[in-house]
Length: 453
Image 1 (tube, rainbow, N blue to C red):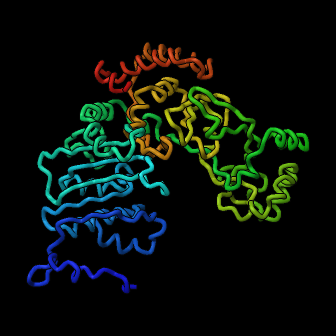
Image 2 (tube, rainbow, N blue to C red):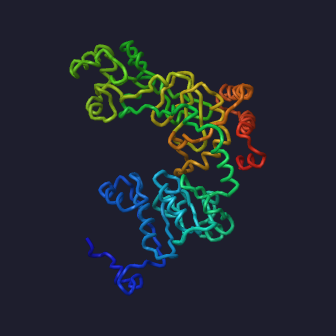
Image 3 (cartoon, helix red, strand yellow):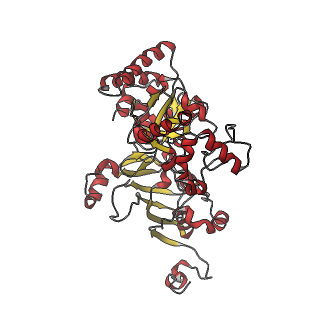
């Protein structure tokens, strides 16, 4: 396996002292490999022992940063082009901390999903640094997303024109944000304001139902009507279902999709729950004969699927079934902007949408506000095509302000207008909501200008 390996001690004798001891390279340059953590499972025990940046879900390029620093001599320089995922991903926290606290960073460039490499979706970034502890260092930064229309051939010109200077200490371990000091100061103010969203909603963030086999459990209106016509018991377990794509800002666009809701025996005691499988199946057939016949065509796949309850015709265990039928906020798991809607009709959702059970339309107003859109831009990682993924794990620390009773009443009235209009032609109402939300966050006119771009 070492047949074509580079024997660097012979090729670069200068990195050894007179006693043959390694002293380091002056420069390390590279494009670390991007291999997902799922493909290096066998290496993880070794990586855990050797690298302080180790986390169980870190991709392999993270370790190339640490080994690059080990290969440098004191005051040596490193330049890498790699994925930008370590800027904000949880697995990059230890690496961010190492680089911020132990090196002097000169340039930090984020290309986002700009196609620097024509045949790869790489989300590339460039960093240049030296192995010197920082002292009041300033970093030149650039987010190529803001200059997407520029040709890559004009990179040097764009860097000089659009690049910003920030203090290295502003590159926090909880996430690197390539923004001006004014934006970072505003972000700090917001993050220290109000109550974290997870605490505000008592941890009640839930993703939609995972069936393990949508072809069987998700049906259209025609199939629903036929199953109910075949046997009226079917109506008991067929529920209206929203997909992520059906959830819009202020509006739900029901597309006549339905969920066959057979709860796991772990969550609900059915007449078959305590029986052995053969007997339980006969009882299920007798209880919901139309559903049973419909499932029969998918029998082998239903049996093999991993997401299931005690029996193959049941859905996986879920402790929050009842929350779907309560008043709630619904939002898609992938979106280009903050798109939160209100539901009092008992819709269920698939796994492409999240729900926040609550009866709080002021929270809905805040989540659809320009302030939260600003938080999306600053705190959420960008996916390809300028999409965001506002999962609860990424949104749980979003600050939610407190409103007085009179403020709540005023905001709720405006929210209701947006809901009554199904989110159509509500720009002026949204502007009024924004002004009230700015007051809740105690923003200055200068800070509002930053929020509004």
